[in-house]
Length: 243
Image (cartoon, rainbow, N blue to C red):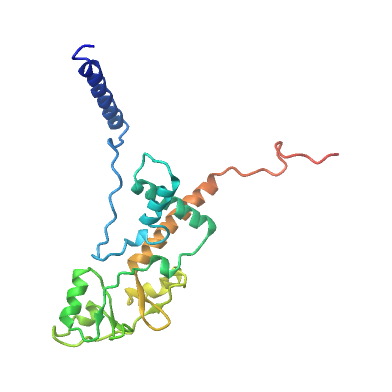
């Protein structure tokens, strides 16, 4: 066997195949090598997932399912998650299930104590790019909320001027918050338990993301229904009653 055999033709053929693969994917406008979808980012600098990813399964569910599958798949967990999330939304719309407040709320709550100063509250609002802060007592019971509107005319070392919070429960349908979050005043709804402890927060963005996704898929399903041929009563394909 010649010394050049590993290079010609084996290495040369490999280079040609890779070049053909790159050319094919460039002509078909596909990425090569495949790049997984970019990870979604929470713009509020908290540990919660972005609102569009909160309902349904999470990454740990995908990892557990792939491990239980028992075979190696030539796809990344992120690709599987993106596919399953689209399937989940379509199934949700098909069954007409309503997402609950607990499905879409933020769990990593940014809050202040009732002893905090205006400066501290403003700092948290600006650092996390949010509009409403729950104010809690020493037992972490909700007392009220503050936002930049309430703090605008307050001295930095002054006490917090609280507003009455708008609250809901985790088991309530999320769509029920639409009227509260579109009143022109309320920017976030506090999700509380039986004892007044804050379990989560739903902002206008959280609800809008859920509703827009559902609405988009509803229109797609409606277009599919309109384009589906209707079964004609008494057509030649229908069995005729025996005479």
